[in-house]
Image (cartoon, rainbow, N blue to C red; front, side, top):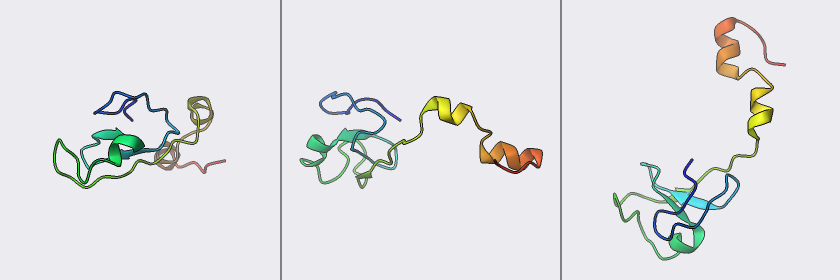
Length: 75
């Protein structure tokens, strides 16, 4: 996920409200209010999903796709 707005260069944290197009051009909420479509590709802007799990929590468990390949169940 990109960490800054493409227009104003405002910092975007993982849990910040942001908007993206299908090419992942990323905009803060203030800039998105001024846009109808992505100025780079003219694509639709949609709310970017937020990351709610930190890196440490993810690293502490086996991701589902790896567990499936190894034939294990997630715990």
